[in-house]
Length: 315
Image 1 (cartoon, helix red, strand yellow):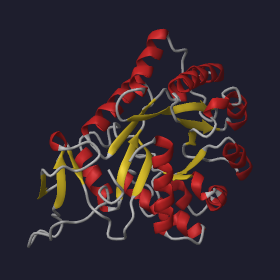
Image 2 (image 1 turned 60 degrees about the vertical axis):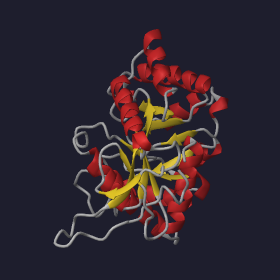
Image 3 (image 1 turned 180 degrees about the vertical axis):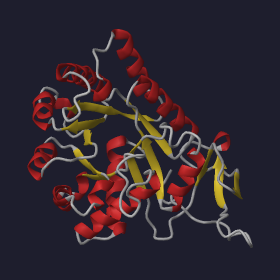
Image 4 (image 1 turned 90 degrees about the vertical axis):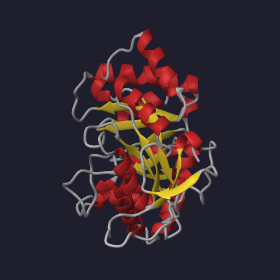
């Protein structure tokens, strides 16, 4: 969709006596022309299998580059999650695979809803030596329609749920697949930046084609990731009053390498901290980054949306 067409615009007044019952213009997927809303449009409530097309009253849109819509918190309310996101200007969501099963479900959601794209990968918590069959399955998923990245993959030496050697081996197997597919990579790295930088140095063709999901490192580490051409994605924890290191990083990331995410259902930003996170709340993260940079929400939304579209090749 074009930037104008995928933005959110309310198309009908609230029904009398039903203050919370909005109507929206939508296109049912089977009647859509790829990339555009067809002439078969209607005005009515948001429905499963439909895509809301409205223009945010502020004139901008946002992309949540990392959420887990296949998790139990959301599986019975995807239309509601998308509706609330659209009301906040969040028109595109990447739902992230963490194993073969969740990657398959992410791909299914992306094919069902126009607002959703997917990734496929094996999270370090589930790291193991991948068989040839596993690699073939992951390759097929990652190369599928509306699957725009390999991930989340990486190293987690904080929780150490799998042996570090197994995590590194699994990461390398998936990096080799990313090189073969020329796919963007979404990295989960926690307390393992030194090892990660050592490993990624063996894959020079991935320079400029990676996203540091939920970046939690220092500015020094951020600089090393930026030197590799990677994007840094900032989650809702940047809104926490004691998140000084993360706030320093958010102030200084070059605008053309900045992304925003929720990691929903986790890491809920202020003012909803302590509750289940969801894509709608990425707006609060973008607003906090704007405050930290003496910028505007509109500028942060514009730049992070352009970056997401660039790295993931989405419209």
